Image (cartoon, rainbow, N blue to C red; front, side, top):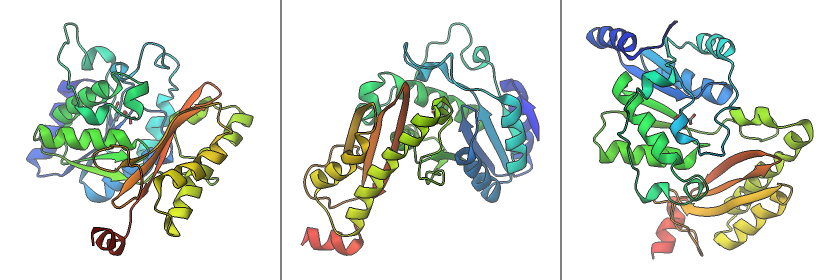
Length: 290
Ligand code: PAF
């Protein structure tokens, strides 16, 4: 495994790999890696010849009062984990390499960036889309791997790729959970012991809704009520919403298409997000169309 910090060095490696006809996979990360990230790396290693992992805490996706300066970092551990997962190349640029002086061109996502996290983190998806577009241009991957935990991010990135004709397949991988159901997240490191125990309520709520859905409940209001109950253990809830899995528009009433139940809120000072996708069976869809 090799580590590079400049676009020039990255390009050199990528050009050589391309010339040799290699298939390139990219796993974009902000570091402080956990098994969720490593699952993406392993998926890329299995499907591609060269796996590039980018480790870059992207300042443009953090709001003014967010945790950019305290975002957890542990480069040495990240490198060891990447190597053990089979990554070939680590791209770890400093901020000045990604946003050199005079930088002023951004990718502005459309309405998909407005609901859910977009409401509470204005400008967040502009920062995500911009850095992901830049990483795609730098690495020129055939495939890029994202975790479904950041559901809205995946939808926004897929839209950007389609709208801007970027020649990359976006692969979304299911959320990896701890044994007790808590979604893996670098921000879980902020949680104290009592908070970590309480964080379970997020999955318990989502799981209650998922269970009811799997057993035939199709009313979005009832599913949200079921999910909300355990989540009262959170210190505050920013949103708990059922949205169309493609358009991210709120779904109120009968669920007759794939949706996601998405949640964001605080345990102590830590903002956590999670979701589950609820997809009615083909048979349900045919029945509701009849
Ligand atoms: O999901 C993340 O860690 C980040 O939003 C990403 C995709 C690496 C862009 O900075």
